[in-house]
Structures are given as structure tokens and as C-alpha cells.
Image (tube, rainbow, N blue to C red; front, side):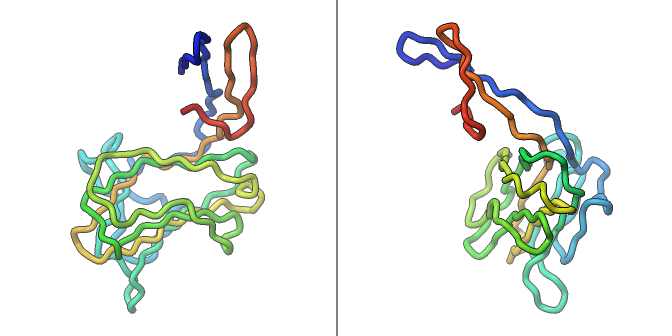
Amino acid sequence: MLLTIGAVAVLVAAIPGGTIWNDGFESGNLDPNSWSLEGEGIGVIDSSLAYSGESYLNFEGQTGIEGGQNNSILLLELPSFDDNNLAFGFWARVHSGLEADDNIALEWSGDGAAWHHLITFTDQAAGDWAEYAFDLPAEASTGEFLNFRFTAELGSVTDRVLVDDVSITPEPTSLFLLGLGSLIALPRGARPI
């Protein structure tokens, strides 16, 4: 990215990392070695609506677990990664609007007991695909497993959210400014605008 500040041109560049783990749901199923589902209303769909490829993860109301629990839980359990600079990302689209009492929450855990909130989709109109990425703290890599869970509570059969291209990547380790013949490293976590 090239920025102009006054009369000085500045180049901002991130050092990219590779993908450590990903699932674009192209098998047409939830991989039983990574994903487990408790409840209804969540599954993999083959359709031209996918962000990329032909399949995506579909959250569609009414969710719930037989016996009265109103939410469904989709758990992603992975072995921990030997990297203290991880990012979790995915593409999502609210296909049919969500009301204030509808929600899909995403959390992470390094031990499967203490859960940390990342995002909640609620009270949103239908829209286009958008990318979501979350830098995880170093403690996300300290447990035996790295877990993520989507908890969905959708009240109507018309409520629908699509998710595709779930991935874990290393965070960019450095950003650099090149200008005036100097090289300056920005603090970790700084991002270009």
C-alpha cells in the first residue's frame, strides 16, 4: 500500500504467512476429525451461493437441541499449533436477516473450559460476503487443543447465515515503512489502514 504523507511517499507492506489449517467445506460434509455438532440447523450445503468453491457452512433456523435447548453448537477442535502469533478467519454472509433475538456467536478456547468471545452476529439485515479475521493472544497456543465454537440461536426457519473458507494463519510478523531511505519496523499488531 502506498501512502502519501505531505511530500513523502511511504510504502506499507505486511510479511504474509501461509495457511496453517483451513476448511472450505468442499468435501460436502463436516470433517468428523475436526468438527462436532450438537443440535439442528447447521450443515454443509453445495450451492452457487458459496464464497469460493461449491460448498459452505449453513446456519439456518430454527436451531436447537431436542429437549428444549434453543441453541445449537458447532465445535471445531484442533491440536494446538506451535505458533504464538495465530489468526482465525472466515468469510460470512447474512443471507436472510437476523432479528434482535437471533444470534450466532463465535468463541475460542485453549483448554475447552474457559471460552473467549470473538464476535456475535445479531439484528442484521441481509448483506454480501465479508471477511472476518481475529488475531488470537499467545495463550491460544498454550493448551493441548485449540477450540472454536459457533453457538447458534435462530428463531425462524427464514433466518440464515453462510460461512466459508475458515482458516488459521500466522499473524503478519512485521509491517515495514519504506521511505526517505530508511526501514522502520512497526510494533507487532499494527495494521495498515
